[in-house]
Image 1 (tube, rainbow, N blue to C red):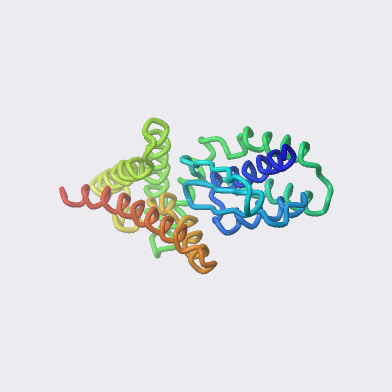
Image 2 (spheres, rainbow, N blue to C red; image 1 turned 45 degrees about the vertical axis):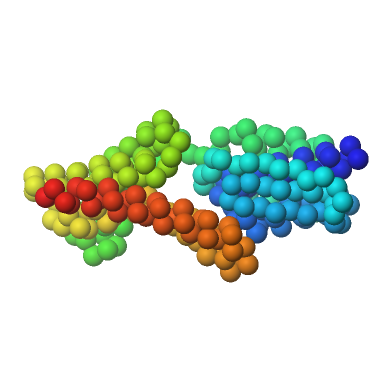
Amino acid sequence: MENKLFIARVCTLAGKIMLKSGAETYRVEDTMNRIASAYGLRNAQSYVTPTGINFSTGFADPSNTIRVSERSTDLHKITEVNSISRKIDEGGLDAIEAFRLLKEIEKARLAFPEWIQIIAAALLSGCFAIMFNGTWPDFLPACAAGGIGYTVVLWIASMIDVRIIADFFGSFVIGVLAVLFIKTGLGVSMDIIIIGAVMPLVPGLLITNAVRDLMAGHLLSGMGKGAEAVLTAFAIGSGIAVVLSFI
């Protein structure tokens, strides 16, 4: 029984890391089931939603429940957990070693530093402005608006645990900057600057995961992620709309 409990800890820890890092729910369930099967638990059951994990080592065994309240996007951690899962499936890792490696992944800060994320968001905003038929005079204003807007999102998200509020104020700042750039003659098209600058905030991965979960038959998870994506898009649009309503 103790061995089963420890294997359950390994499975739920792997699932928790993947779910917090933005993995699809069907992928989380598949990884947990594969790890359990590799350790000899043929009847393990897992049920994952965007906010929690329920795992049992067998039909008649007690279930383990974990609540996941914080979610982000960290593809590096998902890749690392997948790598460990494959090694377990091939028989190359015992449960104790796998648990130790998973703990290291959970504690690691594998994401890029915030200053690199801000620079990337700025360059991405400028490139999207050009891609959406913008002119080169709109490139630098879009970079500035996108970089500053993304900085505001990171700053507010660090203080308030509600991401849509951060997205609202980030897009609001982008709208204000776009208006200022046009008023001072530093840009040509306000629409292009705004569209390019808000692209780093668009929940593209969330929408993709929602569609993939729906296609995999995980209707509850797919609809939950879809609703979260709609709320995020609503917050971004509201921030811009508030600014434009005062022009």
